[in-house]
Amino acid sequence: MTVHSLSNSSAFQKLKQHFHQLSAQGVEIRNLFEQDSKRFDHFSIDAAGLLLDYSKNRLTSDTLNLLCDLAREQDVESQRAAMFAGEKINFTENRSVLHTALRAPKNTPQLVDGTNINAEVHAVLDHMQEFVRQVHSHQWTGATGLAITDVVNIGIGGSDLGPKMVCLALRSFAHSGITSHFVSNADGHALDEVLGKINPATTLFIISSKTFTTADTMLNAHSARRWFLRHFNEADLAKHFVAVSTNQPAVQAFGIAPENRFEFWDWVGGRYSLWSAIGLPIALALGFDHFRALLDGAHAMDVHFQNAPLGKNMPVLLALIGIWNRDVLGCNSLSIAAYHQDLRAFPNYLQQLDMESNGKHITRAGVAVDVPTGPVIWGDVGTNGQHAYFQCLHQGSDIVPVDFVAALRPQHHLAEHQLVLLANCFAQSQALMLGKSAQQVAAEMQAQGYSAEQIRLLTPHRTFDGNRPSNTILLDELNPASLGALIALYEHKVTVQGFCWGINSFDQWGVELGKVLAKAIEADLHSDANLTEHDSSTAGLIAQARAALRT
Ligand code: F6P
Image 1 (cartoon, protein in one colour):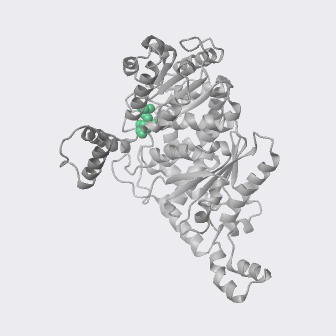
Image 2: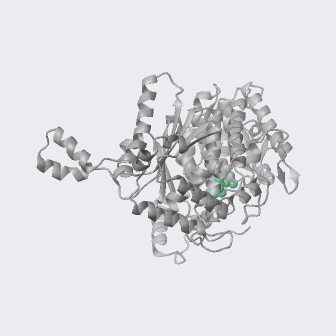
Image 3: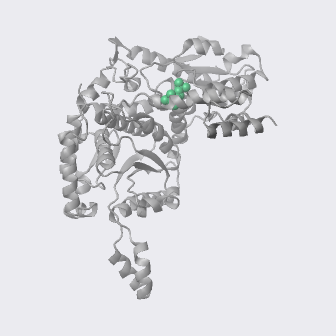
């Protein structure tokens, strides 16, 4: 499979020419709406219960055709087929990428190295379902016979962000009687805060780590274990500690029995793993039926992604618009504005999904990609963001595209709030697109009785350029199925972008160096060895910490 240098590809060259033409003609998004009264119909798409409105982007149908040509030229369709066929598209680790197999229904063959993994996947789902049933029915109790009331997930990165985000997003669907906690940070304040809230007799710890070697997770897991053993005996661990990991020997060495380990596989990347047993805290918090509905929602998006033609494929369109914004318009970040309070962890979750996947610049051919790759992902919930950083989105010197995400129906009965929320969401994308001209500002100020001098002084400050791109994704309501589809939409978007850029979206070598250096510095903090091996900044900081920690 050949991946061409993107900027040299004929499709990319044509896209750049096309952009210059649009710019030379002074075409702005607002003009495109004036020219086509049905632009919303022509530039929006429904799939798996979601609606994506991409009409408020700086693009025409010619742009989309050229972007689809680019995707074809970069072999997106054959790479997509290779992914679903279980080929080792994670080419630096020689692994298949089959998180989609985790949400495929029973009896749909999914191949890894010629072996059908569908039955194995469903065996683990059955294991999870049975465990959840036992905990919820109080058949599984703590060592003293008390029901489990608190579940503490100890994991980091993909073994934390997905489950934490989903549990928060779907809190309206939660099973009563279970309180979920998530500890990820190696900072002892995180674990200490949770330990202060729980009773060891009614707590279940899930040690979630694909590798079971991640230092932050192991530090927290061992501290939790020591804390538990201050109240209970080793023999009682079995009722209070379970593990989710691919590493059976390490789990056993920690003291967790094989039957209390939930299996997953190396063909599931950490940041794509919430659908696997890493989702156990979700199933415990929401009940297994809701977990299954989450998987089904994601599967519906998988089916759409796998089969729809490029120009009518929601994840592909989102990916290509992202490439247009990043590589042609030159936007280096993407803001996620979630207009649902329960999606407040969503931008954070997407940060890992996107930035750990596409924060790379080396192609399959081992050379640097010649266009910018994954943007910086950041954001918050509306309306909070509006009163914090939206000023910069509207009038700052950088163009920051925004993905607005909203659910039409709320989970509460405060109908008036929902109207206000949606009005704000729609108004923000409209304001970014329309802007406000100097003439409009001056006319308004005149009508309000401002003096000519005040109008002259204030008009530039009160003018908005507009022409700032955004997408809006609408869910009917935020429920397990729609959230599953939403997450899968972004997973596939990120994947398609990686395919286009020719990078490997499924490894994460970039986090390794810091881990290795931290080990060496940790040793230096323990010892009195001289610090000449380090640069003077690091040596100075270590010396400060040594002095503070030893007094
Ligand atoms: O940060 C690197 C990383 O490997 C992530 O990709 C992963 O999600 C996280 O660490 C946790 O890894 P593990 O599940 O193996 O503890």
